[in-house]
Length: 424
Image (cartoon, rainbow, N blue to C red; front, side, top):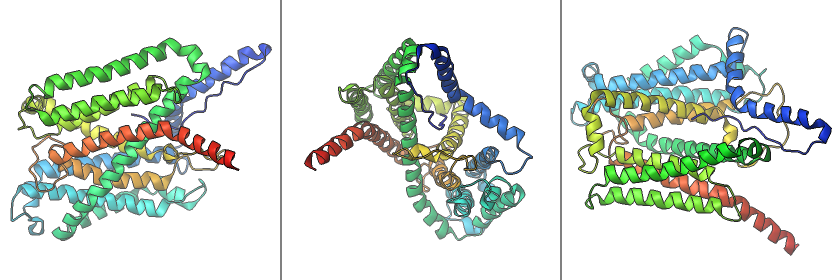
């Protein structure tokens, strides 16, 4: 998923003599959605050695985050022999499997401290000429030393402190999931608004209808497949409950979107349907592989290449989700900011960017240990366990609630404004 800044699409009427110019202008507006990413990369590469470049800096921070994820995975799956030499890391009455989990927490703590320090030092930065922009976009040797130093210091921290961080990380990871689902939902609504504009509907009406139908039918097909794969018998009551609630949520989101007062079309509920079906599927896949109703996951575990590929994709998704959520703090603004941005404004909120990465550090710790530092995690597995299952199910239900609220909230606010105006 790639989240970018929304591009306002205008459909103002033009005089007959200026029809060609209006068509060209609309083409330029539509091209900005795809050309923004290419423009960012070109500007970043061209200005890499030409002073502070916050556009390139965000990719380097993502690289640091990726390396930290890989380090945490290495310590979890292959670090027992090394961690066993450090007496202070022996927890859980000397059980060896806890060493890997605690190693993940220590690496996560170091990453969290690094991005939290960056958050404190860059929050409320407004202009590119501020010194904090230089600190955010440059000084990479110093920041790499800071990151490595904070990571190393965590391995000297007492075990109770690390365990306390693991408990606090549950809340930070939960906050990260909430911000992420709001970002996904707002992106889907922004995309739907773009497709509902008069210009886009005239130019791409058939394509929009096809995508809307495919996404809606695809979500229903996904539900049917989950019934077949993960609810083969009536004994799988919990999976049947999860899948049935997902079906109800998809239909409810579609009903609200197609209501006479909302009129959002099929595209938004279709995309949200795909999203909640994916969350339900990932929740069921997170169930322990010993479950009789989760045979598909057991088969995937037995196939090493499938398990390894799933793990690699999951790590990439973690980094991409953290990056896409952090680069644009405006995606979480429920009201449009008044006034236009100036040329010397920073391209994205530095403080929000680092705060999201700090919470992302807590999130990857939780999914690497299955939201429970005291359970055994198999090699090349990620986010497995009943705690992981219920977290994902809760995330799915909350995503549907947030979407429905975003659809009906403008109507409620408008009704209240009309009522208050009538009283006065």
